[in-house]
Image 1 (tube, rainbow, N blue to C red):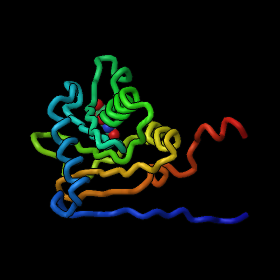
Image 2 (cartoon, rainbow, N blue to C red):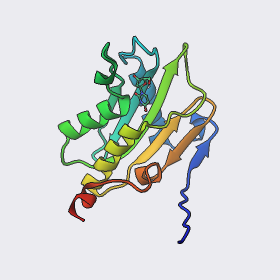
Image 3 (tube, rainbow, N blue to C red):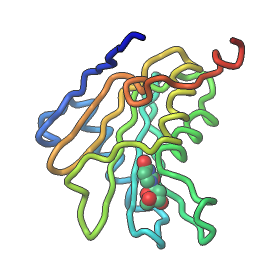
Length: 161
Ligand code: THU
């Protein structure tokens, strides 16, 4: 038996002003996206903004449903829309934030497991790493590939082995 360690790098920022201009703009877009979330059940309005290689920014937000599992997270709404509108354009980055109790959360918002899986598919599809910027008013975290958030992942390659 062997034991292995998996480690990855995570960037931490104290506030939005520490971010570079590209990341900052993407976070502002994600914040804007929270305003049109449909979250009457959780009152947790999540916003996501996706930056494409051609410079386009696509926004999404969570869309809830009275039959709870029928709803969808902000990240997947944004990514599916980006991939449906620009099927040949790689995704470079995604920013995520959430508005709750009249303010943005102080902790960064990490994507849920299903959204990580969808981000991974997008990364693999375009063979291009996606930067993930997770915003909180008290701390911002960023990683440079979704593989960092989803190690030991299942991809299309596993279907052929
Ligand atoms: N949600 C997202 O939109 N993204 C996440 O990464 C986590 C959770 C949504 C789903 C649901 O509408 C609400 O937040 C509360 O879980």
